[in-house]
Length: 187
Image (cartoon, rainbow, N blue to C red; front, top):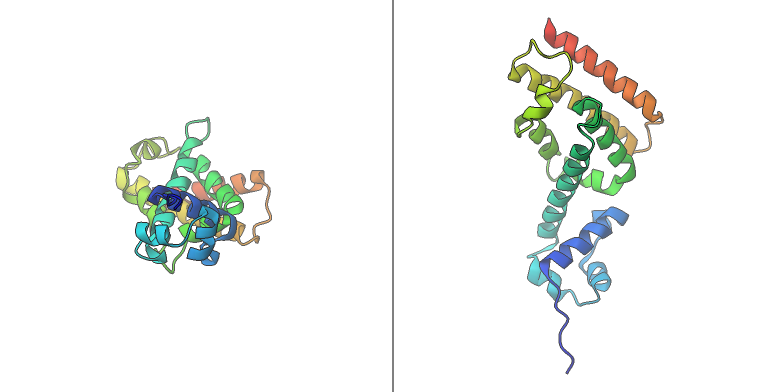
């Protein structure tokens, strides 16, 4: 009798994450995942109680992926809000299936990335916001929250193929919105 193939929880998650990147989570089934793993469905359900539990882990891995990618671009000569915003919009276009999961109102209200920006440890980002030396941390968080709402709207349009602007035009709009929000909060 040949030995059973051992499939770890991490292998299940890695494979499911890659399949979600390619085809979206809604098309992911235990049978398709098992076929990709070269196993039966048993290892999947040993690792996860059900597909919703797997979806939860894919969701958090996607949020982590987006956060890491956005942070990679900060500190390279442009303001953090701009670097992160441009990266988020690029990810929405290039990783549409992951963006749909990250921004899913149905499951998670799309809060995690926004909550990180509002409550997380983003002191460095807040400290380097241009033109905010007169603002207290609460006002800076409010400014960051406003620009994030704008960025998320653009990213949603980009993911849906409705945003037909060059990177230069997107950058100019982000800078314009930032300036407008800064002026409004400085009154």
